[in-house]
Image (cartoon, rainbow, N blue to C red; front, side):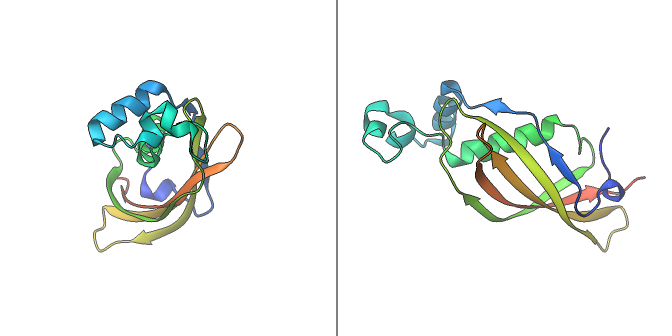
Length: 147
C-alpha cells in the first residue's frame, strides 16, 4: 500500500530487498552511459588497481537503489518528484557479485504552499552483503497528501 505524506514519521525506517550486481548490469550500464572506464569493463586492467578486480559504476549502484526502493511500492502513485539528492557519497567500491540493499530513514517532513503535497527528506544508505555502507546521502522528495 503506498504511503502518503501523512503516513511518514521522522525516525521511521525502511529496508529494501537485496539484489546482486551482475556482469550484465555493468555491461548494460556502460553501453547506456557510454562509460567504458577500464576499472569497470576490463578485467586485466582492473587486476592492477588497488581493488584487484573490476568494480561496478557508482551511478549504476545508485540506479539499482532507486529501483529497489520503487519495488517496495511505498510511494506508488504518491511520489510527485525527486527534488534533490544531497551529500551523496560513494564510500566503498561495489564489486560484481556483491548483493546490495537499501536502508532509508525519514529525517524531516515539511509543509509546502500547496495543500495537496509535502516534502519528505530521507537519509538513504546502500549496504552490501557484509553490512558495509557503500553509498549514502539524502533524497528530498515531494509526496502527495491523502485526497
